[in-house]
Length: 220
Image (cartoon, rainbow, N blue to C red):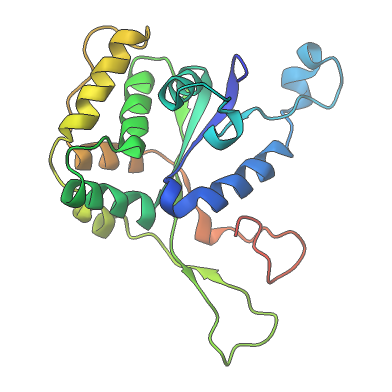
């Protein structure tokens, strides 16, 4: 892992792993502005965007939690992928595995703590709807289309309860690493999700960027 990152990506493994990998590759192609980084980078072209993605940065033998906490603490911007998958996963965890840590919720809680204590510059959510496949009668050049993300409807699905295992793990991490002064704030899962979605972000279904083909969305 590097000592610092411009961006950290947060996603739910079960539903967004391929998307997150494609997003990582897309962001890594960009560079910072030459006016900002020309001196430190040594050339007029700026430097490559440093992106933290656990599946790219986790090293053999390293604990996942340690790697992610280091990535969070050393990132300027936290980019959570807010989707049906990330939200429904919180609901399922409460219903099916209430004694297990929800690691997406844990990342969101930690990011909020770091941001509120001035340890993180910005939280910039990416709102992602479900993909709708074209109908059989659609033209051959028609690709999959992303639907919108209904924030209020999705938040209503998140339990307004504290995930005790996740809260306890957050407190353990806060004591092991010099993250924040004092004890983290105790919040319900819905309070965490609401706080994350209140940050200004981007609606991915509004993006028109492609790799040059109308049937290949850039981040599909």
